[in-house]
Length: 160
Image (tube, rainbow, N blue to C red; front, side):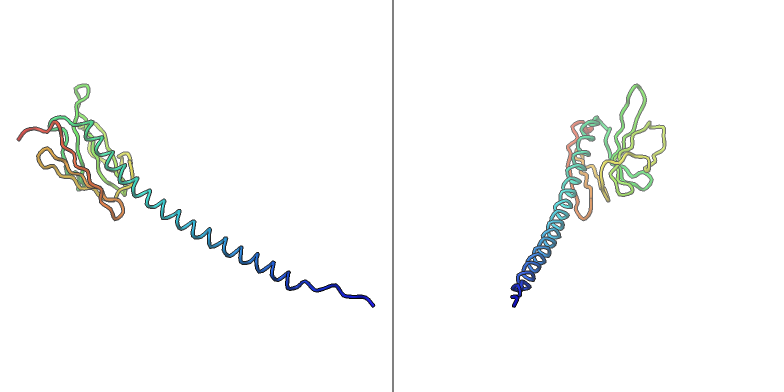
């Protein structure tokens, strides 16, 4: 008589069960890692927008800080920071403003009409507020739900 080989069905099921558990836990770890990465990336984007918008506004104001050159204005219903400068005996205007979800810069001759859609995009932003109180220019830029504020003391502000 011939003996039958011992059955290994229990060990086969155990191997497949371990493989299945490993696959489920691997998938869960990938999903948790992806969610953590997404949250970190969103926070980094928010911090970058805050740093970029305030640093950009601050450096632009500092570079054009001349007497009576910097002032907040409403142009065509858009709040802008307007900087007027003379280069080679011709007046030029630089405007910083928010349009179509972007903080933008528009630089042109003072003779040209302001066209906000033609400004160069700097970074994402939803809204900007600017006010001048004596020599202190306060600029607030909103990106997402957060407002980012920068206060700049104009060094060349005219005496009142």
